[in-house]
Image (tube, rainbow, N blue to C red; front, side):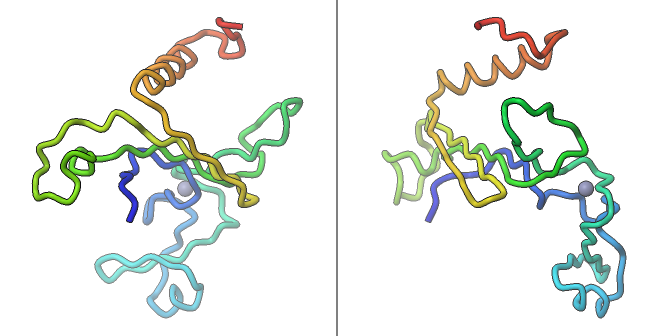
Length: 150
Ligand SMILES: [Zn+2]
């Protein structure tokens, strides 16, 4: 059993059911016939991947190389996940009935490519802070192509 809880996932499974154009309203029979479908409160949808996403919850853009400028129209696939370990899974209390535990100061950053390749690393609190600060700096920069530490 995994001790990790997912805080962030960017993948192709996060489209908003009932809110994304890829989810087409259907009868129960139509939805079941389509294979993968969603149901809620007697309503049914099937997913038509040939329809453009309208919710913006898309998979990452597939990396094509360091010499290729990415664009929104590029193929998408894979996933990025950030996971933490809940306090009740801290080694000092695991297997007990208490949630009163120290924080687990590690997070798992995982990247899964569409071709099945994947990797994951564990970051400590200092590294997670550096990652956060870098992402914030990049988002706030006027020219995200600059690399201030290069
Ligand atoms: Zn969507």
